[in-house]
Length: 458
View 1 (cartoon, one colour):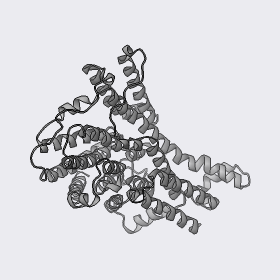
View 2 (cartoon, helix red, strand yellow):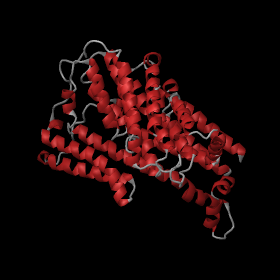
View 3 (cartoon, rainbow, N blue to C red):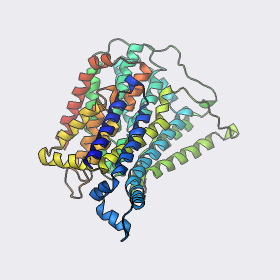
View 4 (cartoon, rainbow, N blue to C red):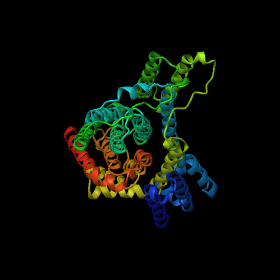
């Protein structure tokens, strides 16, 4: 059993490294995630009986109902009671993300964000920095980081002409998206997972992380503002399509925007009232948005062929690639947890270290060089939710908030730490060494300020 556990750990470690170094070998990280996830469970099944008796002995005996154990009964138990748990959690998050991303796409295709392009055309470079970062911070709190980054970059590309200035604002957008996504339960796929597992409640989670995240963003903006000189070099003509897809009137666009943002914030209330999974709330909001959009477009005589607005090629991340990537990661980390390795590590940490701040900072540092999604999921499985109220690992305990904040801050240190960073890297072709020299220390200072605020408020 020890040998199989070590093999699973080795497979996942190699996978984490390959996913983080996608820009070097150009192997799709979703491919790596799926291969590692499936391979980990195949290896698990080679010694499945020992793993099941270690982690689920009572449940397996109850499943047998007095019958003799067999190879088939073991496979059915693993499929129905072990693997299904991780598939169900992953699918809940994926359905939530599909619904929220589609809401943003519907708003974008109906010209809801056109006013932002006009409103953001300002010459003061430092004012533009603050406005664009705060707007990204707010949007990312409602929609996942990658969707936010792609949306904001599509807006910036229509405004900022100078490539050097655009790179500075792109890096700021990436940082703001990471920080904005970490302080709400609907802001990132990992925080959605925390919510699905009932490790957090949306209101307490946001209340605990808003100040640290906002303080980090403000410090980063102050440090970056020192680099900015002169005025924003803008395009003289706004390059966007103004055909049939801008058919809606101003009040109709505002109505869609209010329904979209208000609906996203209603999802936690929907879950609290009905106790149904969050993705059902997001699907309901999407259905409402589509119904209202259909009414607004009745004069098109049912023509649903809306002109697709300019979106970067990196939107492929948001489709099947992101879905399969997250499913593969969930399967791999699930096998890691079910072989008992994470329980062993968690018990050792509690015995020898017993400090949640060290756990958070260590995972955050690792997320700067490895993908933050698998590290977040690993951190979630290191410890179980403690039923004792007031514990660091209880629902809304310090650990869950610290884990999310540190992994978000770690992922903004280097581009390899997040899908949003990878998207920025591809869109603007930013040199890794340039980012290290100009941005890394500023991101570190911002993280340190946020950690101080977190400690003071907790």
